[in-house]
Image (cartoon, rainbow, N blue to C red; front, side):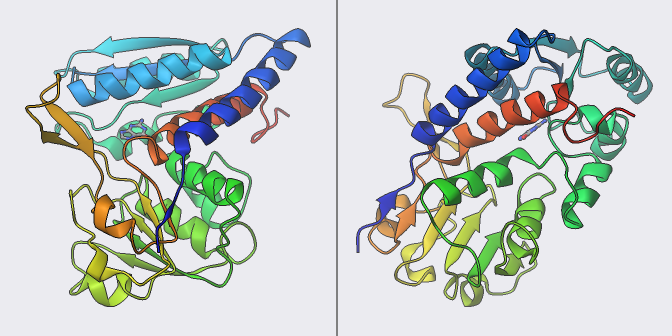
Length: 297
Ligand code: GUN
């Protein structure tokens, strides 16, 4: 078997085109242009690159954006006071605090200080909780983007065995929730593997759908999966590469070359899940501007 490629770049471009139209219609109807406020603490180069991709997408779809920078020495109190000022600013629809934060800051505390009605990342406990009880919510962008890919390529999840490797708050856990809910979205039988799983192959070998978000290059190899599996590789790892101008290249968590011979569908890295995450952030920002999730009384 040779896998068909899941082209996140192409699908995200189509979705962003639709969002652009929706934004223009919203503005033509007399509304203010949606506005995303990004907050970067410190200057981690990977974070800077992610923020650049997000703000570029904003300009593609017609969403206004601005990035505020705070030094990595900022105190929790100062940071939360800045977030509070964004919460209270009616010209701001969505707030995104780029993670990870410096280690002296608690990301839980900081995320919880964001107004859940502006939490376009879908990380606030209010939005996470609503996701797990099938209430309208800002869905975490990466899992939402993966579900858009399933829809676009007509890849069914109902009744399948889905295995998620990695149990992070950003990807693995919300992905497993969305896959496993029987009322909406997934309807799959779902297994979560994490760093304490004794033998992950026992689980991955039975997967119909394998979602990998572990942050470990080459973690999943062909002998760990069955013929016809759907591979969703969320990993974005920088590994040294002298032949590249930047001195590094991006690889996922899966051994793409061997897996593509065995899988039925596979996402490349880059150009698979990554661009979908950004497209879903645009979608959430428009939902926030329209007050679609939390209507005003
Ligand atoms: N760091 C890595 N992924 C993400 C994300 O989706 N949102 C934010 N805010 N930070 C991240």
